[in-house]
Length: 330
Image (cartoon, rainbow, N blue to C red; front, top):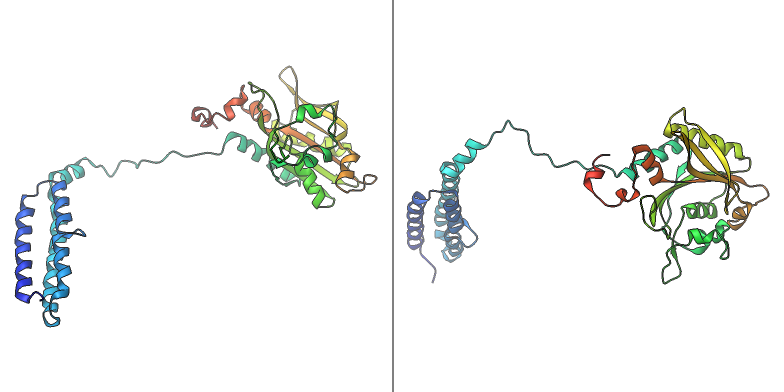
């Protein structure tokens, strides 16, 4: 049997009187919030009365519903008014100074190594070099065989890297990207390949088993060693200053012939900065180019070395320790 209109209105009236008495005793933000939950919450007293509305006859439902909505509106307004009058709310308003600047979260920045990569890439990009990337987990073909480094080659000891159980390895130079690009595309090519590389080095102030490298490649039928010298002169003077003195020393790399070490004058002496050379014809043969007519040059440099020189950093380990005191300087 449903509740009649008189019974429901009596309950509404009693609840309203009870609420007024309880609200009059509320003297803090916490007690008013408890009052709100007790009357207006999901399991509150007014909510329970709303649930009983379904038991009222259709003729009575309109007037009872209007009374319930009136009480709900009054309770909501009373709660808001009460929160504005309690001492805690007043104290907050008195101590809050809207003229003070807001609290701003700390700003992040690009890691110094990534900044250096972007700076170097931008210089070569202005010279028409395309930026390409490749996988860090590589095959022996891309990392050694195609680069004229067979299994029994003496120089392989310095490049032998970390192998996976499946026979793959972590690349020891980004020259692997050059091989992939040449396998997929035909000359002319003008690319640089930045990325992480891995070598079995003992970690100290100047060595790490993981570091960053940028290698470049230019391939065409008419590319000469003079073009290589011109590109590197322009790059190094753009990076270190127009008065930078540069020298080329004969060297050996298995994937270039002839090969050179490139030095810049640093202080009172000379400092090795990168390696370069004309691409060995055997490399062109491995990627399917006609080695009799294809010409090109390649070069490679260590990003950490450049960053250390440009910013006066004396320990390569600082780049990887995630010490914010160091990183926030850049």
